Image (tube, rainbow, N blue to C red; front, side):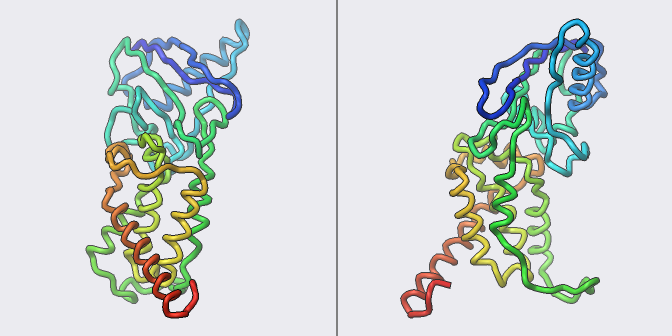
Length: 262
């Protein structure tokens, strides 16, 4: 395959970025998208004798669709043209010979550019930290049936826990909302008995941190669900809203009854 790549280059968050064009020949259709970028970087290294050029910086780690590091905007879509697929799982057979492919980093204020296609997603870690911990001790190796959980709830919690925190939901949303990510992290605990103790404090703290970090409001366009590589459902957002309003009502009742705002 012969490809034309238009790749965003940017030294850091404060520098002015620009697109640069690169040509690649003889790319196998069996090659993964990240392997294709590896080939391009190898070509740039080999060409440095003629023309010094920095290699292209991009995030990657497991390359198995688990870690969420491969956050690229490809031809106007987070993670590229295939639904339910991360960039590292995307193969060049989904493109055509002679195609022009435009590659960009996530575009969101809370995700500043580190360099080129890499962005800083520390904001997600801060939201998780704001959620605190679960105080229920399950021991070293608890028996599988020690804490009864309805299969439906267990399945929903597992579906929510599948979120890999890649940020595609933020990149897809016109308001750069992190609602789907936060909702998935809230749901995976809210659905299980171990997460009930701190449930109300957790949702309030995580939503407050999300707002503090500058993520936008939910746009209700479902773009987040459509572009999520793990197919996280927007039903989790509805569940998070219920948890949040339940916490707000509880705080109001405590204040009215003189019980404080704990």
